[in-house]
Amino acid sequence: MPKVFIVGGRAPAYERMYTDAGWDLCKGPLKADLIQFTGGEDVSPCLYGEERHRTTGDNLERDLYEASFFAFARRMGIPMAGICRGGQFLNVMCGGSMYQHVNKHATGLNHILTDVATGGKISVSSTHHQMMRAGPGAELVATAALGGFKEYMQGNEVAKCLDAEEPDTEVVYYAACKALCFQPHPEFFDKADQCPQYFFELLDRYHGLRA
Image 1 (tube, rainbow, N blue to C red):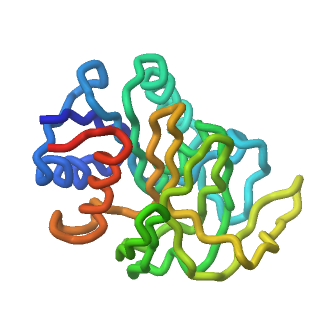
Image 2: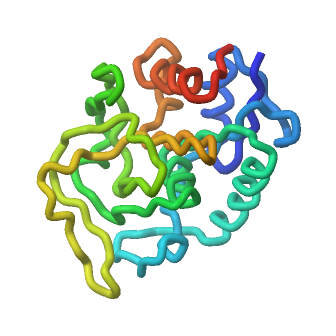
């Protein structure tokens, strides 16, 4: 069975998700087949060269702690996955940035995303008020089309995305870092639901990891 080491908070929900899917849990990263980064606070904007938006609630201490596991995984060639804040963190560590505030995504309800490769429609959670802006070398894996505004910082001023055709980025993959960045929360659902099934499908697609 594949083994996962989980970094960060809210571990019981992630542990349940993985064990329900037939994975084993590791107490450390040395023997892990995958390092999983979890949800929580916003990523510190200083890591991608922006000032803090008025809505951003970051935790630089956590960012720096988790950066050590990112560096270890890169050095050892261990695949990584991030969920919600964890996906946003990996996106930033791989060279991406963030829209620091968006609307229509933090509703507590579900919405539909579209897999770019297959065209498949998947029902996922809507809990994030920020959104990934993919960096160089990223593959856009899944998008949504909820509309609304997307805000970022230019110096000390709030700026908005003016491209009405730009899709809402939900999932990206960085091959160079072996990093899957997944904004929804599959751990909120039962294992038979679409969201966790899609998440594990992507772990198989990009990392070749299957229980």
